[in-house]
Length: 422
Image (cartoon, rainbow, N blue to C red):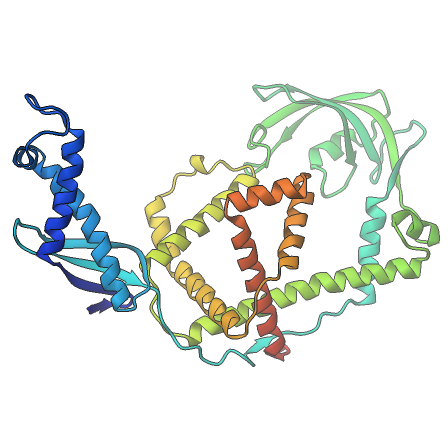
């Protein structure tokens, strides 16, 4: 056995003549049973004629049977954990001689775990100030706001205008909306609307031009100057609910404003705690990868590149972007992704080894909980979802993800936490 580089190895393998002849006879016999040659009954064609007529097929079949078998035997003998398929070359296959070939392949990396407890990370227990709590309560008030019709009068800044809007010119396909609500004079309202609707009374109409920026999110309007006819239907004011015990009761299982505020404070703290811990766990992974130097098989890296790209494409699709419409050199993209993929693979191998060392695993109860969560999300029966996940081989991945999260939680608990420097 020879080590080429990193995880790449090679083996020069020899198959004894007796094994070659035995396999050749078996292949010839199989072909003889099936072929029909002129002048001979099925299965009665002379062996010599079969060997002559089907020499290429016989050679291919013998190689396809012997090469994998003797490669596996040689790898097992050397106690090698082969990953991916071997690259076979230098094949020497002649009648009456041993079969010889060279196999180049990659093996799973073997490495020793360094120190993984007590890694220093930047982390501070999150706090929620009264001002932040008040701001969140104000957001909830805004969500519960009611818009009340005013007596008919001209629009002024701060009013909420309910308008019927239709395009007159400037776009190929007509734009219309029966009830559009705009806040006059607000920074979120395009200035042309505020300027032309200010002073308008209900049932009154105005025509005016609106120029949209090039990067406007509606492509139909981006970069265009569109003439609109707007008719005011109603003037409204926004009424915010008062923060009292009734307000708290309307929002859920709270009896008082104090209970509501404590629940909101807890929710904000948990959200920040989750984000802060996520950041610390990323630091842990980076430090683990940086302090463990070992080679990674190319086949692992290539597979991780594909996984990362698939995740990115799914994210684009979820945002309404068709990946097929993006003009990219995907081969170049793959090349730029390799270093990140290599670090991802190293992190995964390290976490697997730590979870094995610490006997961390997913329990059946934890896997069941996740299956139930997926079933609720998909609004399907738990048994049906479980059967589908098992068929698709996803249950194992779920257990693996749970084990990884538990391992990261363990590392975080063991880590030395330092406050960020001012």
